[in-house]
Length: 490
Length: 95
Image 1 (cartoon, rainbow over the protein chains, first blue to last red):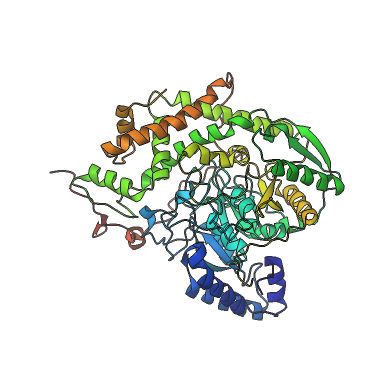
Image 2 (cartoon, rainbow over the protein chains, first blue to last red):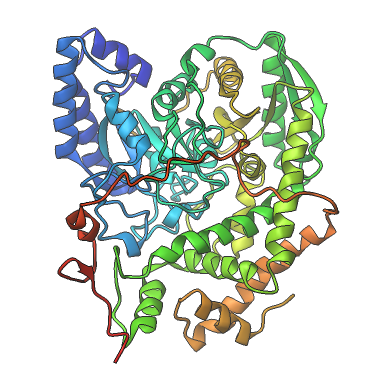
């Protein structure tokens, strides 16, 4: 049963070869067995999942099943779920039970999905390793060959990626602000897409950096991601940045092929320190696309190297503003103090972890009187140049191919001594976030130590269909079949 | 631009986050590390470039200015750390 992809499970459910309840019970059993080791879920919701599965079975029996009827999913604990605790991986939201449902999760429920539980993440989605969660780190189901040292699953959607890789869910929701879908997808050997900014509503998603945050799916295959995104996406009047555009048939785009497409190869992504095996995999990916009928073209994105520094002004600035709401008054945890100011300061000192406090302080500084122009305004101008690079490249090519991350997964506890060293994980994913363009990570190979490596496909705004077409072609050529040692049904 | 301990305390005050004196040196080093790395943006020529404020490549829409929600005080207050009737309660502000 665990060998079925989401598309396969959907076919089996429709053919009544398996019931939604059987499928859900199998996944709940896997969570019970493996979650104590992986910590991929903060809050499993078995009772809710069984009720939803029974409702899906009833809908399937009536012939009224939605596109995701009976499909068991993990929900990143950044999406508000009505009546189910939503923590954002933070102590400050540990007691928070939203009275409302985020638009993305409401769309999935409309289509019949089953929610297995809330997936772990870096606190407020700030991190690349899942080490900053107040509910403990997530352990990757992968280990290096002959080395049992626990590895990070990537971040911030590390719980979602680990759950999909270890088969504790058929798919998962995730969010990406600077790489938080694509980098964990690469580390965990699964597929994940950050769609165009505006494709999915942000309403009801705990805000980190509002001009960058975007929801997307993680799943075992490119087609499974396409199916999930089809349900998650769509215009929402409750989010003023939500795009009022029809949602294309993303799954159909996976079957288009790449014949005649022009694929750009940005030369600035070839960094000096890049491991040779990642460079080799990138070249292999380009060769696969050429063999499938695409043409590869060198392009230049000259402001690539400034992406990260721009990001680490814009994102903390927006975060310091968004996180001002956690003051111990209306919701979340409160720490007492002698007066109101002391209550605020104690609440925020005790409620936020070290990385979140650091980013709020950076954001507060770059927005403060006298420094706004030097930091924030300048960063927004560089951001415009980064977007211009992509816009110009896309005059000449249909999509870009790059590595997803500069390394494979690393051991828990590594790169913790220097914040900037951790930030460098996102060097290849941040430029697309700054520009709002879609990016998909596809598992493409293993490194010498047996760990997955992903390739990233970037596309034009609102052209996820071409991104899916290229991603699916890579997936077919790569034939990535490796599985982590720790998994359900293994 | 390098932060001194006084500035670190001032930022923390602005951000409403209590910082103990013993934490200041480490925070100062971390923040200066990040800010020093960010300085690389000074080498970019941004003359005449319009700042990009958002990720959405589209005009933001306006909605009708109408009340669409309300009358749910129990839901609004359900997560309050402290309440008094239909109000959020905080430590005494005015003597």
